[in-house]
Amino acid sequence: MDYNKLAQMLFPDVEHTPEYYEEKFPYRKLPAKAQVTRMAPSPTGFIHLGNLYSALADERIAHRHGGVFYLRIEDTDEKRKVDGAVELIIDTLRYFDIEFDEGAGFPDDAPQNIYGPYFQRQRVEIYHAYAKNLVERGLAYPCFCTEEELEAVRQKQEADKALTGYYGEYAVCRNLSLDEIEKNLADGKPYVLRLRSQGSPDREIIFKDSIKGEVKLPENIHDIVLLKRDGIPTYHFAHAIDDHLMRTTVVVRGGEWLASAPVHYELFHVLGFKMPEYAHTAHLMKFDEETGGKRKLSKRKDPELSLDYYRQDGYHPYCMKVYLMTLLNSNFEEWHEQFPDKDINEFPFSIDKMSQSGALFDKDKLHNICKNELSKLSEEELFDFLYTWADENALEKKDIWFADREKLLDILRLYMGVGMKRRRKDFMYAKQVFEMISYFFDDEDSSQEKDAFRLDGSEVREILSDYLSEYDHSDDNSAWFNKLKAIADRHGYASDMKAYKAAPDNYKGNVSDVAEVVRIAVTGRANTPDLWSIVHIMGEEQMRQRIESAMSQN
Ligand code: GLU
Image 1 (cartoon, rainbow, N blue to C red):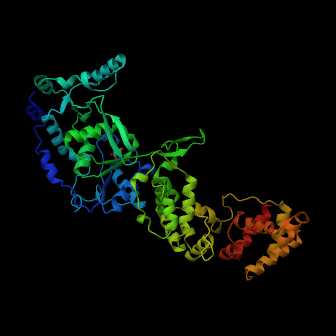
Image 2: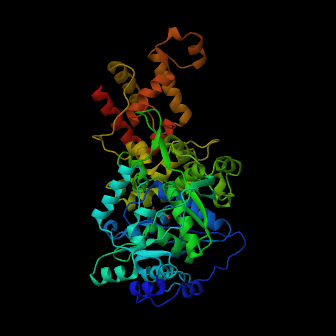
Image 3: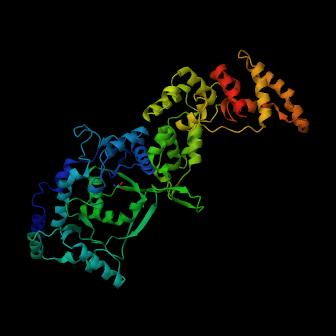
């Protein structure tokens, strides 16, 4: 077979050779240890927590030693493409504090964008140059099989109990003569370009995956498709060429690609490329209450897989980052506790500490991290974050919440415990913050659910009535509390905790039960920070209205 002739027949218009591209895209000059990583999404318009998880790993691996993290768009599947998907990816990752150094999203003539184009559909001539070269070397051939013919092969294999796929004796187009090919081409028959696999079923490939460790898999024997009928490459072919020419050093990608590693191993080999380091990530799993076991997070069942979910509810991006770091590297949490003031980017991130089996997504853990991290902010920082969130989500009540900056700051200070020995840790995410403090802003007919009084209605009314008649807004905290104690005594509740503990049966309860009545009447909640402070942020008028309304409803 004259392979050169075949190559010329199939690719008459290819202008350049692989050598041309090798020279055009030289190895990157980088500091020692620096790694080049990439995110290579298909532009489907959905970006999820798993993407953020790997993107953060990519970003840390690259930036830890001054490497490069770039964005390549794998848009070979026209059907799945969604407008605006690239902007969405960049914008979402930026929101979560992850920036690319290069690639899609930067102008073509940006000085760092010298390994482009970064959209696969714009790289077709590059793929064709390498495809032509493989044909010249007898390592790729056109396959004219129709869907029906492929289906017939599959059925025969099933009947023979043979491995399904296009390989060996089943690969009928493997041995077409040049004349047959020429005739098919002249007849305008569509074809795909296939690899002429050199693999053998009784050999294995062995490589070291940075997460999974040593991986042994049977060699690829399939004559896999390199170029589809429209000349667009498959993921496999594009992956090998792009990651080689863009000089990626570490490929972090979903574990579902591990099974294809033998194909990639063979492709890198026949193309004469050095293999990058692979890191196949574990799936994000969650605890499934129905089965009591672990399962993969699913787009359909789990709204928390979507990154929009966290943005809409106002999870602070920094908290998300800290949480994902704890999932990514098991030793991060300890480090962060030991050096709470250090920039988390200083953490010595390492791929081999990444979880091998499914990383377990745990919302309670995320919430604990949120509580901790938000409590470290200043009230102004939290204010600004809340404001941006309310603004970005065009929240209806924004004008009411932010009408009085000092009032909101006072509320935040109180709830965060600013100035106290220990910070309070009540806040988790923006939406929850406003649910917690909404009573400061709601009008009477608010639909917010209120905690129920534990005492009966007449008792509640009497206590509240007493409270109102004695109330003096100029009382300081202790004078105010002394009045509550006096009310407690009058109603048969112990004002002295020691006395109460010594003989609880002598009382209906103690002063904290009385305080709770007032607290629920004023705030609708049984648990709040210091009530006197709340009343003084709220003002006397609103407090009186609240109490009167509670009296009339009980
Ligand atoms: N486009 C592939 C995907 O979205 C990329 C896999 C990879 O990172 O190589 O799954």
